[in-house]
Length: 329
Image 1 (cartoon, helix red, strand yellow):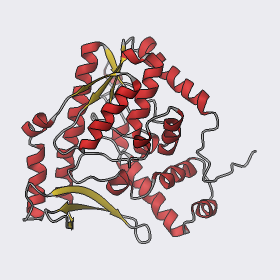
Image 2 (cartoon, rainbow, N blue to C red):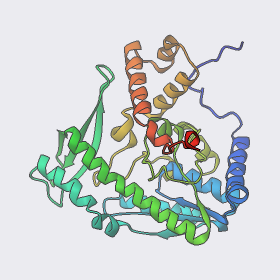
Image 3 (cartoon, rainbow, N blue to C red):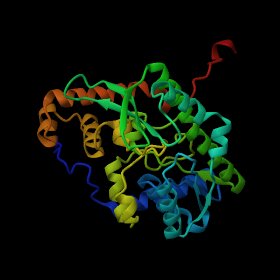
């Protein structure tokens, strides 16, 4: 039996040209042969995952058969829309900008969130920005604690711990953003007899960093078995513009910009991906610590946190169960 060597290069893609061709073949087969669709709709966020997905889709079914949908709202980073437009022009694919602010406003998304912020920070006004973050200390218990960070008109940042009820309410309202975006993607897909292609990577899928019937509600997920660091490797191979490669990954759902690391993972993707891979491959703890330069207690707490996220997000990865009638027929 060959002993697996674990290193910081363990997720390096050795034959990236062949992998790219295989991904494009998968997308083509699913779109044209299985689903019998004329093309593909991709939500373009200005981030790395949607950029790679759009590039693969363009190569798979032809750039004329790919439609990029850019879905900003009033709390989106304006830079994201501009970068998304540039990407579509670079790939020579058609794109539509569909601002969803009015839909979210009618669903009281902003009102619900801002009422909670106002309650916790009475000086909150329209000049303030806010975001939700998780503070996770892997030197202690490793528990994820939700906080609101509010940037006031003087650019001072106020960090406030929020209750479970407030966290659940603000998250439920925020998830309407994701579900609204997906409903718009399906509108354009069905209108053109296209398929909706997802952009979720493996770390996000395994840890539950997506919204059921939101960004997780798609027809195919070509990146779901690629770690984020591998998506970056693909991006370089596919000549994705450097401004996308250099951008920090972000959910882009808060008026105060926040990275994926600050919002959800609490660690860089380089460590997250390697730890998830190490668990898959049953790499010994002492070897993990040596490669990642972490203490045993730190690794144990991080792995425990990842297990909690996996277990708490199981319903996101499953179809709704149905009642079995076989005993009644």
